[in-house]
Length: 408
Image 1 (cartoon, helix red, strand yellow):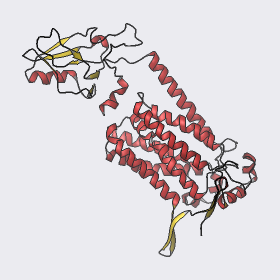
Image 2 (cartoon, rainbow, N blue to C red):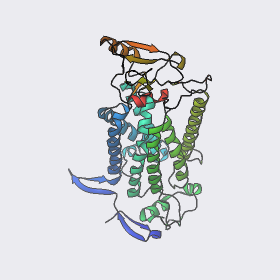
Image 3 (cartoon, rainbow, N blue to C red):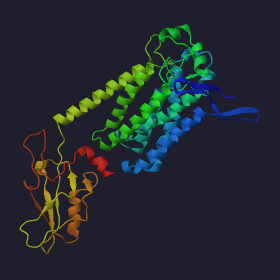
């Protein structure tokens, strides 16, 4: 027999059978059940691990690095989610501490899982000596995807739903009715009027849809962002807005002790404010004090008899030197023709990967002479203002923030 019979009256769906467990069996005289909630959480983790491993190489990491991170994120995330829930529902556990370890009926708070996961990332990044901004921006993309998948666990448990609604997708089940009837007078005082026999908002579905959209947006943000922590801040902003609105609909919120304030709404509001401040301030600083970048054009072979070498922007270098100190190196062989190292137009050399001096030494060891000439207005032009650098058509500017992305 099904645990729940779920109706979506506005959609013409009635008596949809839903079981909390996939299978139950006896082992050593004890009944063991495998619940959909746990299986779905496992699927969420495995999906994020698989996708992050596929992209790891592009961000300078290996599959083993990703596995190490998740091996720590999984236990600390689950521990944080449970402790967060218990802390704000202490009255329910104070007289029965053993119930703290029983998660079969739910009782995991997402924000607590995020706190535990962040701690795990910091610890592993310190061990592996990875740059925190790159790691946070990398993993932030997969967080909403994991959430989206995990929310279906709430559906199988018939939990995390909202107040009454007459919208076509309103949901009703014996599970929602039983929960609403179990609410105390104090709970009902803090919530809008509820009718146990009426459909409710399927807020798990709202979060699923919103998180899938956030995941798609963050993929583009991570691909195009130039400043550290931009992807993570974008997640805080987008999910904070979504959770603030959805939390206002839910009938099972956690409250700050002694107040009528919903914990998740307060935390979501703080996330949104912090993200907006960071994004605006970082953008303002960049506009007022843009980083200088220099593009070095290396010559292509030219036909004999040409008056001067033809320079093309094949290799872009963003060294620490200012524009005034930069030079364009033209390499000539004994026959008078200009040559360059075997680099294609898609290769980008940064200060971290290659040093111009070491390249010249390698050329000299092969018996090739090098000549350095100062840049001319034909190759690059810098404005006299400290606020911007202008380059002629055909020369591409590479900002220092892009070095790590291109170095991968």
